[in-house]
Image (tube, rainbow, N blue to C red; front, side):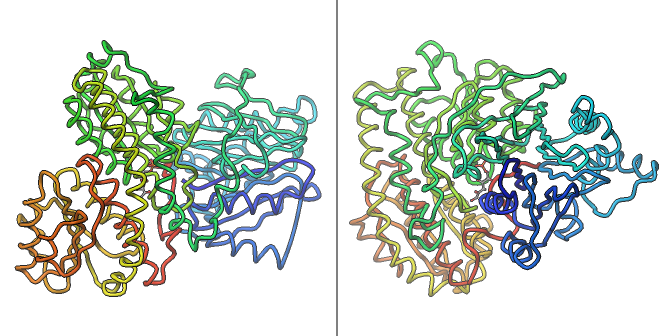
Length: 613
Ligand code: F6R
């Protein structure tokens, strides 16, 4: 987690570091800090809290320089204090780091024996001392290799993950960066270079970028960039052109990013499917399975974390329902450690908004090691996950700035849906006419989402009644059970209210004990194959005095007889219902959180991209 940035060029680095850090705040905001080389000395400032606090301090006591690094932290080792904030300085070097050094305690012990002293509790300070230990500034004048040699020696002793940027006034004309399992990108300007954990942070400065791969080290000078591979040999790199537009990163008149992103869902879904559904056929540019290859797949595993895992649970219904291929869904942090039965007849689908979630990447690697074919459903073009998978299905939802996922959830579901139709067609489980009909269904969905958006006002009204409740229960059945899980998670992460998602049928086996007149129970009851069962769930909750809020199909008259609060959603085919029913649940969590005065775009303790275990 955490975000790191760097700048080298002709401008003052400080405003650029602050601006790019601001754009990385979604990666954590426990503390921030920057360091620059000013008049041949290291100057740094660190603050607990978000970037605004650091900015304020720099307004009061400014400094500047043409080379600098910065960090916004999501705490792993050590509390969010100024001592633990980055950059960390040892001797004449300053470093910012994203990742975890697993052997830091052993390294620290040996550095302490060498007489070094530590000011923080972090694993990063160990890297700072290691680099300083190996740093021979006199080598810089002769070969210009002082700092990078020290970095290479230091990282050879580290086990764990890192993306790091290092500067030193004793080798003053460069930034040295390195990567292992945590992303880092270099933006290529004219006589200036921008470094960041994520390309979206440097979008307004550059169009062309270089992504570092695992084990690589780069030396960045005003004159140019040299990348070295694991064996310290110069590496040839491809320059990539970014397709994103800086305007997409702004709030566009909405009060919060999350609200804008909720409203962007029809567009995000359309961008995900258009171009892939031409003339009733489904075509994936970067993922193809010929009929015989599709026929060889005996099993599918879907993996992801959090909201992406919920998407996977729904994907299981879509894929099994249409193609009849058995599907297992695993949380990535479980899959990677559970000795799964995966072989060359398995297809692994990894879902990730960021494409940088460390557990999801590890699960993908595990599956590849066991011979599976892999495909990534991902929102971040050129992410580590999509670069490592055999095939990729980019979801084109556009940058999601709010920490809580909304549009990328429903866009992932749309990608899973067309993938399910594609697999079914390739295996002969459905014919051309069903394929065309399914495609028509998802195209029509985008318009129905616009209708579901119309519930916003009604839901805002409901939030007034329920925002002080201590807990919520969310019930769904079949394909809408995972939608209930996702709705409950949105309530937890945005409003900090305990919320439990449950299968309607399972409720009476335990959670029913939670129900009383103070427990709002959200029930997803579309008119589909399990509709009658959902009516029973409503009755069972009412019999225990629970307050029922039902999301039902437009035109349903039965539900209104049973529940006080009913909100109507347009009819769609059963496999598409979770996409539509998730939208009002996003609004509900948003408005409840807003009434509770919370930061809806940056909930506490969270980070958008979880690059640590
Ligand atoms: C919740 C949320 C998280 C992410 C999870 C995985 O709103 O956003 O649960 O879904 O951290 O992240 P990605 O999808 O980037 O792998």
